[in-house]
Image (tube, rainbow, N blue to C red; front, side):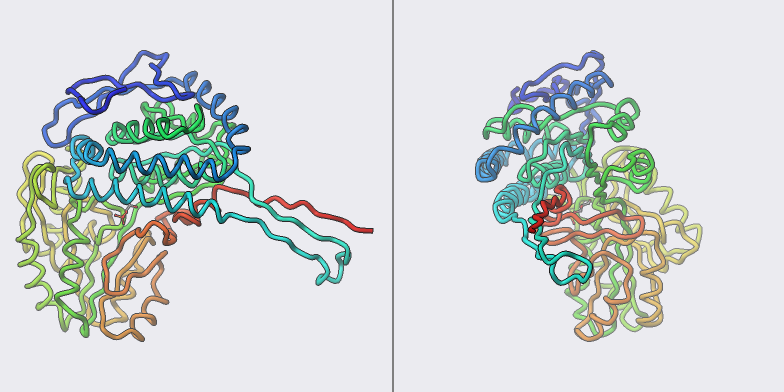
Length: 484
Ligand code: G3H
């Protein structure tokens, strides 16, 4: 399985029981290079019977893996992290080809993931149970004592999106593995090549066969089958809200950890450091062309500073470079033409509803240069809908109270930012925002990966983050001692 000399149109296999195999269906799916529209590679399109075999193998492998001492599991993760660093050039190159991620952002994703895997290994070593004495409860015998331990759930199904294939896959895989689960990983088709490559590195690091199986294929053929399969014990999913809701409706009693859409807002108050707020918002809106769930998707400005902010924001945005991901750019091609058409439809609708186009992005196929829409109101679809593209949405409000109301007027609840020099005000506003996390004087951001990443409303269920993911992927088990 060589990834170093990929030629356009090469065919890749899927990973089961430590081996690279062909699908029984003999069908293939195509991975495109979003920057030039050419076929980059072909992947196996698995059938339901392939999935049955994979899950059977994952189940057997997990039984052995959960009894492997945690320090041995941690050593394997550490070796995998080292191999990822050694392969970082190749991996960031793959990311630029298959998801059009600018080279420096791809490198950041890869190195961040190596760090995450190392920290997960260390965190796993700290995992311990507790001892409880039942004597403080009036109805309990004084002679009951409980030993409470953590056990793996079994098979974790990890389903990952195109925008952070490496990080959002292995931030699920690493906590699952360190706590003794086996994993069936289903990457997005766009992004699968880098995921397959990192999986191979785990095998080279000594991961036993079958503990990590990686399946590829059409969600329409195997997605529902996987999510509702009786042998899957938990689903960890990152993707759109509509798919997340569908998975929840068919998953039955399986625990879910889901990070879905977002419409993160940045509130800029009148006592803020405007240059800082502008810099953070520009990065927050445009980094990786806005294709991040935590991108700044609304900038909410109080009237008093709105004109000054907007002037500087336009100046800074004009400096942003747009182009091919192998050049030094911030904005590159959107993942496909449909995504670009959707962004265009939101812009057209906003303009029709009296938003002001301060910077009109140029479009060539699925490449958009930065767009700025000012005076966006709740009449525009983009006030509520997630753009997932390089479009700044500026909403003007009269005061802090209205800013809070606008921010909370959303089905999503991922993150929010508050820019102000008044910490009292920042904390007071933070307590009123219906989101999982609030950034004070910084753009919204999932990392660092040891922080909790809670998602509320339509933005998800559960909490990711190294320690929190390990907790979600294990269950408590008590053994109660009854004394005479
Ligand atoms: O797209 C969703 C990601 O979880 C966003 O992660 O904040 O590190 O860009 P990020």
